[in-house]
Image (tube, rainbow, N blue to C red; front, side):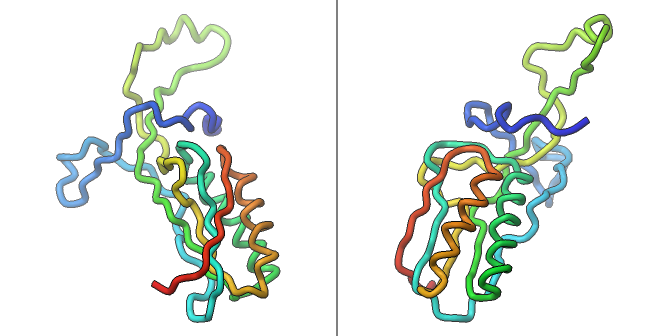
Length: 176
């Protein structure tokens, strides 16, 4: 069985479950963490002069699963690697802390006789998600003035993979 659609868990109205202790796992609210799809957070070349910083900013509060963040990251990074190889620095600015719990039910003919369900069932941890507030940057790309034309296309490709609506914010680059 595949994963549930994103519209079932993209709002922030449910209580977040994120406490997992590596030092004392028995004290954790979440006993076992699901594996994380998003593994790479920084890509590109940091050691070059940049002129602009492009941020992909969320328009409203949204919860994004790690596989949506990973597919958006891959779409933008593959395009940038193809057109401006190593002339940018790409950073994922959110981390999927929230553990999504799901009460799996039997579906199909005659399933009502096998399983009645339970109101407000706690469920098992199935996935992780990042809780993003309105105005919070999701991706950041630093780029030189000559390659500005490609950044908007890369961020547009990333937004196609993620639920919610986003705007692109441009600021002059400040070295940190």
